[in-house]
Image 1: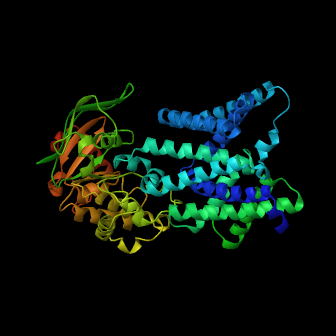
Image 2: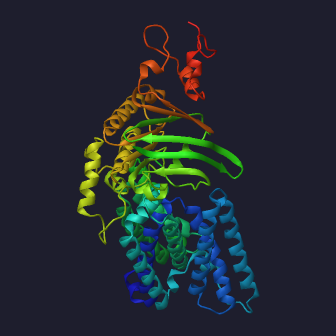
Amino acid sequence: MIEALGFEFMQHALIAGFLVSFAAGIIGSLIVVNRMVFLAGGIAHTSYGGIGLAVYFSLPIFLGASLFAVGAALLIAALTLKKRHRMDTFIGLIWAVGMAIGVIFVDLTPGYNVDLMSYLFGSILAVSTQDLYFMAALLTLIVVVVTLRYRDILAVSYDSEYAGLRGVNVQFFYTLILVLSALTVVIAIKVVGLILVIAMLTIPVYIAEKLSNSLFSMMFLSGAIATLFTLVGLWLSYTYDLTSGASIIMVSAVSLGLFLLFTHKKL
Amino acid sequence: MNVIEINNLSFAYEKQTVLQNIQLNVEEKDFLAIIGPNGGGKSTLLKLILGIYAYKKGTIKVLGNTPKKSLRKIGYVPQNTNINTDFPIKVIEVVMMGHVDGRRPLFGYGKDEILCAMGALTQVGMVDFAQTKIGSLSGGQRQRVMIARALCAHPQILILDEPTSSIDITGQREIYELLKELNTHITIIVVSHDISVILEYANKAAHINKTLSFHDISDKHSTFHTHGNDGHFCEIELLQMLGAENCNTCEEENPKWRVKP
């Protein structure tokens, strides 16, 4: 493993693992406490539509996926405002349509130039310098927003009706959480792939929730736990020549099992 | 002085009328109990007073202003505090959500805000739990925290929606004793299925089932009929009586609803 650190792709993988894990820990906490896990899964799969479009129009993949995911997040936020009780139906619909758009545009693109598997299961060993800048910028944005507007985000997440009565713009912060989730999902796709992204957003958060007594400590503890899982997963993946995304998720899942076994915490 | 004045208020969800021609005046330092069947419009009326719903017919004046403008002077304790008990949040943080937005520090909470929240927790007897995770409290304790959150804004009116619905009997009594104490300087409005609030604590009662009938019950003895000498009366009778448009039946010698001894 040590000699591998000499390779640039490995250095990039480690930095990306750290940046994405921290973003996933913070945003994953918000997703879990707001009960938006299904919603985040929907956005993750929808963003494949953006990948397909980016491939077809030869745009940067990150850009296409981000725009598409943010669009989906805004659409979901607008629909939630009107018909909250039909949420699950809308999410399922957007989930499938997004994927379908992606598949069709990849079909339409002449020549075989996209490795579909790398988006479904991640390709952390192929992170470019540009990708790293994007990830670092997003993590910075998330930390700044969450730190400066912690009170509002906490109030909206804990009791949105009451927050509204106390003058907090609930719809704005709800939409903000969704948009940040969409962007986090996009960078996490690079590390674990869009199918596995949900596990990365929830497993570390689930462990951190049991160990924290405030949202703030939960967010940063989740980030630290996610980083640990990513690094261990990456090491296993390198040593035994396994798919990195799947290794990271399996490390997380086994750790969760051990955590529950040894702490006797209730599910 | 009337802190709430409602005149000719009607409200409908799409086509279904929920409230019709509501008249209600609440005086300063009243302890008003709102009772009535499920779906009778109790919570709807609260949400109209809080300005959550907009009304088209009639008028509501809260502290001489529209509900939206007076919102900051109302403390509200919502129904069902058992939601989100897994949420990692400390008692003090929940209470500080009650602050109305004034000047805020860039990061975290101001010293005055923390002091004020601790004061509110002292008032409800929960100050020792300030750093405890909310999920580890009992239903009664959690309800006290919600009352402290409402007190944080120094309200002139405190509105509670079924505050004792998920609390054991001892806890219920403690909550009502607390409300009685607060009632010495705050107007209190309670929506409740719990008859004991009407019998012992409230001085006014409003029964809502689409229409509203209002009763001054400050003199308990002359208001309620009793069986025998032990001062006991039947819950169903009481509800029927409060639900009646007026108290004429009380004057009847042998009204239908009264159980024969």
